[in-house]
Image (cartoon, rainbow over all chains, first blue to last red; front, side, top):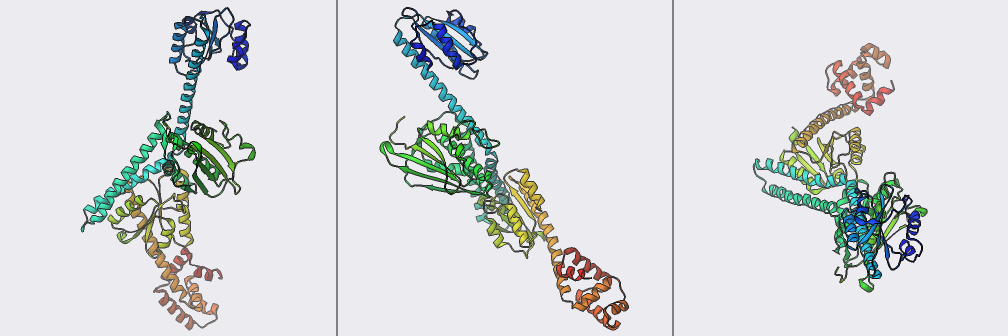
Amino acid sequence: MMIGAILDTATPLRKRIESALRPNYPLAAGKLSKPVPARSAFGSADHGNGVLALSAWAATALSSAICFIVAIIALGMFDPDAERNVVQFVDSHRLLATALVFGPQLILVLAILAYDSRSRMLEKLLSETQNRMQTEIDRQRQSIIHLSRVGTVGQLSGALAHELSQPLTAIMNNAHAIDRMLSQKPLNLREVRGAISDIIDDDSRVRDVIHHLRALLRKDTAEFGRVDMTLLIHKVLGLVRKEMALHRVKPVVAIAPNFPLVWGDDVQLQQLLLNLIMNAIDAIESSGKKGGSLSITAYSVDGPGGGSYHLCISDTGSGFQPEIIEKLFEPFFSTKKQGLGLGLSISEAIVRGHNGSIQAENNNEGGATFHITLPAAHEKSA
Amino acid sequence: MTKAARVYVVDDDLHVLSAFRRLLEAAGYDVVASNSPNDFLARHDHTLPGCVLLDIGMAELTGLETQQRLLELGVSRPIIFVTGFDDARTGVEAMKSGAYDYLIKPISDKILLATVEAAVLSDIKAFHEREDVAKLSRQWRSLTVREREVMLQVIRGRLNKQIAGDLNIVEKTVKVHRARVMEKMGVRSVAGLVHIAEKLQRSGCQEFLTTTDHR
């Protein structure tokens, strides 16, 4: 790509840069200005914009000098610290930089390095650049996944309010019942005890829901560990129990005993299950059938490196049109009136982040099935 | 009076179910608690007055369907729907289909007890009316064909002589029929007889309506 194309050039640098950039950045309209010291080049850039990362390439235009181009793509939402880091880097290596402003939000900074020992510097810069970009991409992906999870929980707000109001109703009525029972003769001690123990149970029910919600809403960075999928499936089903009941969707769960633990982020895996379950409920609802069933099947397959974990989520809706099955996981692809089209693409991103795979297919007997494969957690340390 | 009434509580959440049961029992009601609509329908006793506290969102049968089943069984029982979802559409549907009230959880004991009491009172009233009508239609059925004919003429204000002419019998026989009608229907005046006829008509008593239709 861009870097390779420029590296082996012998033609004047500016021309190369301009022609390489145009097709990639249609907004590019500026011309390269004369090289100036890095600080002033950055000073002329719009400070409202942050810096994404460095994208560098070098050209052996003059003598042994290496030319770097530092492309900084800023859309206002990226790490503002990065800009300072770029300035520091350019300054500390006695670089000259020139800034190009391509439209209001796209800034390109060119730094020309007059430095001799080329390859080591170049490698270092390239690898630093790539690391930064990767970190940034990961961070962005995590926060998109997190935001979408917040949205899913929002969709469930009715069902969740129900999960909270049930125990609260029970607590309140038990308390008032105790109040009345205490003034009655003979005192029915057994009933009073029963009510008190129910209150204690319901209090922990409320607490569990709140903890669960907090975990789902709060965490925006993935923390990998060993995850017990059986527990997770039941936890998620607990959350959507009422939602399913209201749509007449019956859960059918079959989990093979002794399946391995999965190596993953428990919150993201819950999100994956939530997405697919909500999707299945929608599919059944929109098929016009009066209810249906949702089956979750889990089994493991032995193999080298600890085997893998398979998860199938099937619904009894009307399945997918064959021509759209390929597009299901594309972002912003949706067949729903109110869908954003992010649910499945985020599910796919989660599975990919777990080194797994996800596929959709129509069932012979109607409805659709999502097949997910996840690597099992064996003696993994990181 | 209301304390002897029976309150059916139907909720698939066992904790909510027993909390409602305890509170209503402590308030003096005879409570039948079911964790499924089918269990409730099986245990429902239409011969006793009372009301139903019915969770609207259950998997087996929704609250509205349960209400429909009761209606199909010919039972008009005040139903207080209870829901954990504040969903206006379901609320409107429930009220339209004749719910007594619609309560959203969490429900305070005061509102619950006040609503149950009002529902039970209205059912007791309806119950007495139903019993009354049942008694009257039994009495009506006990009349012979000729006695029914005489009664319908009497309540229209016709004189014995006119009735005798219409039915082609002697006036003395009309008098005998008339006395038997009064006795069987348990009234002493024509006004009382008219009152009964009105009640039977208003309640939609089938036997009574089919007889009068032919006139």
